[in-house]
Length: 242
Length: 329
View 1 (spheres, each protein chain N blue to C red):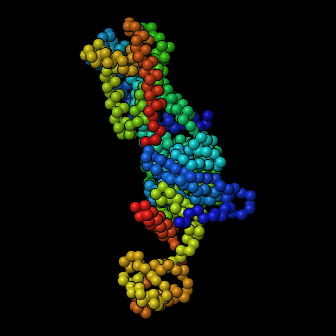
View 2: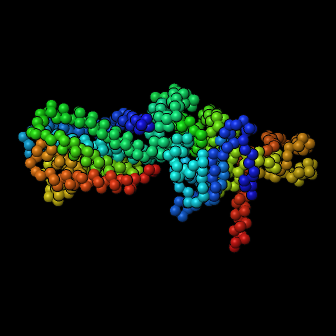
View 3: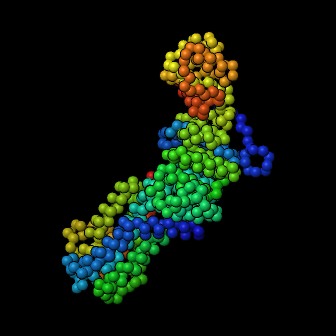
């Protein structure tokens, strides 16, 4: 237990002291949420843009922590041989992974504690939010994104991994129905966007929190599939040492 | 070939663990695909002793140590560390084993004291983090991050992490690489202290001077094989020499007539006589140089330095390989 707690403390210290990580996990989501809520330029198709944006930004927050932040951190730990060094201590992989999961969840809680009040302050008024479904969506999305982030981190070199995670983040942000409605994407891209984990997570969150009026079953299935396949792929492909 | 001379174990019957075999490597082979990095290597290391695994880069030292740490699998042979098989019992072994990786293995933005504290907690042996930081001389850098430390400071932090295990066996890979003179002295002192407390210290190094100053026993690797194994005294025995520098192109025939021994020129102005430094011979040599009006700019006599032992052994091995090749053709 002591080893796990110490590992968790180290994970959190390294994440929360890292300016770039904070910019990614808190700065950008808050900025996007506030800016596009106040400046009504996005084709959100809701009366108040924040009603469309809030669930999308929560999905973005999950993606930035579970995929990008975890993936970049772990990738560098691999290339700096931190994982190799920890591998010779009594910590063990199960406790290391448990500490990383807890750290991701802790950062997500901090994100939600900031983003949800900011959304409410910007006028967000979810009709009949189903918070339980939202929590389920966040957990499933976290698994899916962590799997993708760790698959890249477990194979690519530190710097290439950094670029790949950031590039993927931008692509998924634009295609994921987080700030741009799927309906505004051109036909082929729209179909592709729906099967991406980002689109699926934004969909189910929007349904849970805003009652988007569409049947979320398909998005749930897509998200669940990512949550199974991506971690399995990471477990299979991950190399512990660079 | 000077392989495996009989070893003298222990430091007296005081009932301590000193002398007990802690690491036993038998017939170890490590392969990377088609490449055989380590071929049929055997040696052992005892508690309370510093055993140096020596050899040039690429000789198979790190591969061997990584098998001992449980990090790498052996293709063949057996390894026992504290009686355990590191491949199957790594978890149990890890709490009794201190490790210093060649690559450091610390996150660049991690702070010195935080990192040591973290490792103390991982091992759970009650080591005092602040005391360890002090021991390795990093108290003034306690709040600094790994990336801001000099190469030598990073090595000392790495050593502190190995000490956090309060280890019974320690594997230190190139512990003094990139460390300045003062840092080296600190590291040597700590390693010596670790062995004196009964820990079996195995260190891999290509720095022969370090090994010479620090070790009880050396295992010399070359080309993935052990070419010699023994105490420094054992490896040097029978290899006394007189090494001196004087004018270039001395008349070695005249010198041989005067002293009765043959000198060979090994550098522009450096000469070696393969003989023990008997006072009479030394008098004859210096007398002859004086009579001939030559200068004497350097003189060292007695046991070969480890570097010379190493050169001799690897040259013997190369000659043997060459002879084998001729025979086969």
